[in-house]
Image 1: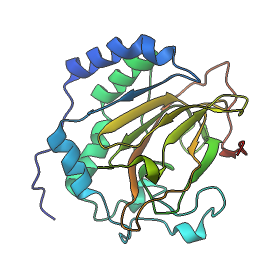
Image 2 (image 1 turned 120 degrees about the vertical axis):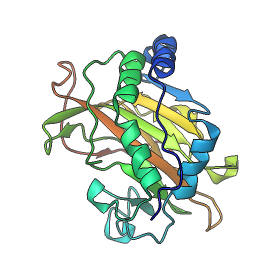
Image 3 (image 1 turned 135 degrees about the horizontal axis):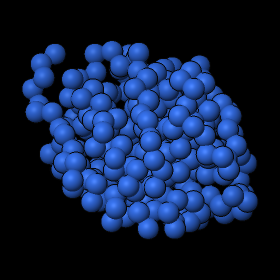
Length: 247
């Protein structure tokens, strides 16, 4: 496979300034710290990522029929970086770029959380794709990564869905910590970056089944960031906590 697209690299100073500019907005957001940044990558490179995104028949995907059919039916994921077989060099470079110093520095300025570490193994993250009719129930994530002895602090989602329609559903829902209502609904629009703190009170998901034509899927890059030491005020475990929500 030829590396026929020039690789992308973040501008350290521009990205740092973006983080600093949005820090207050991020930390004061409800129901928990988060931000939505549109047109995050230069348009050309966002288009390249979409062009290189694996189709639904790629061998990289775990078989969703052998996974959790109650809480995440029709969700395609890789589970681990070892499955990134024959993925284009451009896409591999982009994944590495999101794990590089400029992006980590941006996240630290944005969130105020210092000494962030990436997960080059992409435990549970990397590439996600939801098929028509699929969903992701509201939950909180595992945050004790025992495989690396790290503590999860930040989730980053980068969406790759052009011409997304409201009737398709698939909004990322952020719920209050009493699980009484969705406080924020974020459409998974193309070239949109979402960052949020993850802990055992950051309830999120897209519980409404996708109402898309069969050929349209919900594509995203999912990235998780950690610290070597835990937040002293947080509870940690290795469990994804699925939740029931009001109809």
